[in-house]
Length: 424
Image (cartoon, rainbow, N blue to C red):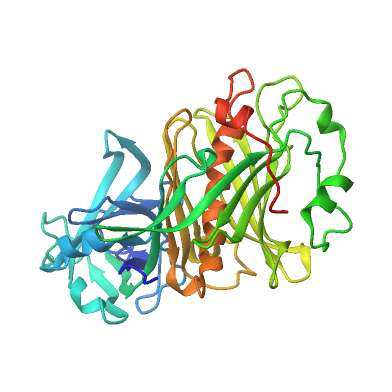
């Protein structure tokens, strides 16, 4: 099982330095404290990214910097873009970050700069294309003007980021085959088994959490949630290798129920899944690897909220948050675990690594979903490692259904599925 080539292009250490206030300039009316500056980063033929810009008063090293979300280039993008140098336009604005039809509005252009990078040179190892200050210009092509009026500090870096790519052959609740994708090749590597145990009763992790058998957890877990006739509970997806042995599973440990007086799962009372891995050589024993919580966010746009914690060897008391976010219920989105993003947001003080971990596509509510999963190669030492991420992807996809409004009916595959937990 070989990974596919990917590149990670990062634009970081961003900061803006304005001219000395003692010298009149066209920017003398800008007050970043009240109208902060930001930049858009647009590599040719790729979607643009946006980042806020802190103001720097140091002409050598900026006091505070920010980073833009990374660009992830897959095999198809590399074939298309690495044949010639790639121009990257960075445009700096002052004002509100409002977008209208994809265009920046209510903001004044401060200046722009254009850098050029050679992606092919990064295929063999990490490379830094630029680090330091650049003079901004209002020239369309970003060329420096005779009188510099603002400068941008930026570091542009690119590095190989090989990944394993998988695709579900159908919706997770339909027990599909999972394929590995390598270019135009599709090779079956896993199979899924969906089951629904309507007699499943749970609320939280029991005191005998370290027991090897999930049946023990189920028998010992009780709570007032079982009084709800509309509970969405007992769902489980088991991932099998090609020999038929179970190598990972996602088990709904806390039912998804509507909050009092509503028809939605609230953030204060989320549903939850355990992602399980085999406990040693025995296929009858399992131990939790991670926990996924999901709920339905209120707001101008309906969203699926989620949080993922990774368990240590000492159990759930020492769980480390590795992902948290919201995606559109209508449009779906990308579920992603990226340690660098978590650290930049201030939520990753105890993360066990750095950089990209995994991503999974999630289609909107009511749509046929066949998740495409990418897993960073350095997180996969064996097939069961990859299977854990497949199980997590199935759980987040099924959470879109579990968090649908309780005034809506679930699909029959989720309501009347055969109860089969024989693998336990």
